[in-house]
Length: 150
Image (cartoon, one colour):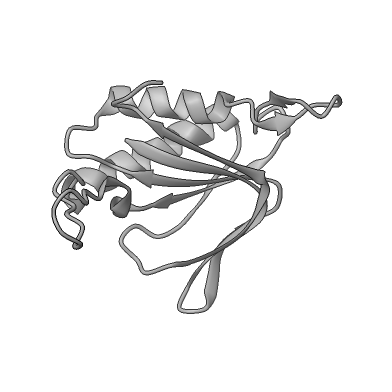
């Protein structure tokens, strides 16, 4: 699983100009699911995202997690995170999981994150064409991949 995590002042997701998710301070998480992703990837990535200390403490140092800040999260599926651009100019998405494999993993990932955050998480709609608006705070953007645990 690959995630692009953005610390935001606010973020929203719309489908056909209708807002389906909206948060103030928190995280916008774009999640790409790969062919071989499984429950271990879900657990590892959920722990990492919820515990990631990228919010400022009282000394203005990044030392607090989204949970510490009582922030919110929007999770949006994005298969294009697994694009391969090795050949030519047209990206290949061969590593991205099919919807049959990805949807159950995506849904379980949301549930696990909700359990760890101890509150509901807002989401985009899997497979939909969405418009995402955000105000990146910092800017702080982190990329994490469960295959390459750096």
